[in-house]
Image 1 (cartoon, rainbow, N blue to C red):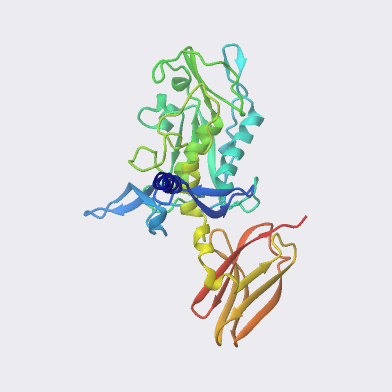
Image 2 (image 1 turned 180 degrees about the horizontal axis):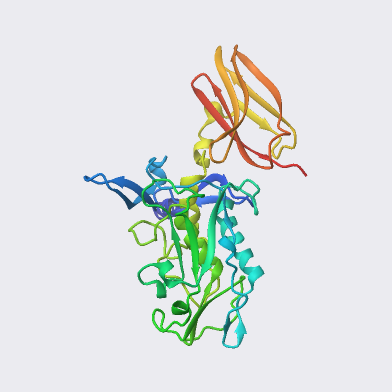
Length: 369
């Protein structure tokens, strides 16, 4: 009986997801399986010197990811209705207007916010410095071969290994061409369209196919973030927003747990296992940072075990140094210093203290009420 209980305990322990110290913009921690292998686009050169984009699977055990993994800058945003091409004023299906222009703009913002939130950026982030061009297109040619069955398309230059936000070759288009709207092929429906918001405006029917605009844009934005479709043999899950086939006549899908873990592995720098922090008893008491959230004055306490060079800096969640606080030689002993962070924008940061060769970090949140 004891052996049975022990076996069940070990089994339950083995399937519990690993909890990561990364929390999203709502303060929710992220749980990921350490061994799960998520799909990324890798920029690789063949024997002829040509660049090719290849799907590679990487797990948490293989972090950090190689430098040739396709990526862009975050947080991301959209230039709505680029070149003044406005959204359709309405889409009438089954005598029902399923499209609202204002709600459509909200869907675009929500699609970007959902990705940004994973790394702690709040909604409508003022820090967005990577805005992609987005437009509705009535030209089926914009969507390549098979464009009449493609709800949307994201494009970026295949000649570079970094997705440039301001590049003229980088854009996202939603298909409102007559060839797409008229349907008749995949799926076989009399008419197709996009609905806005989070509720399904019509009951499922074999007469039409209506797609969540939010999901469609979120999927294509995933490509601009560097993610492939979820059919590359990795552990991206059946519910991934990066599924090749868009779902129709369903409520918005949103991001799956696998989508969030994949994004966090690529973009949330200083992602640390909670278990690793717990096992870091040797250094756990040597760095204390308070308060968090902080409005202005941040107190930093640390211990110098021997005379060493000490540097203290603040970095953002992309790993960029936003404030250098100290660079000096320190003698043995406990140290306590207060730093003024009034010039930092609200958001999530990390304070990094390097004492000789030892580097410690703690997350802080800047929030002025």
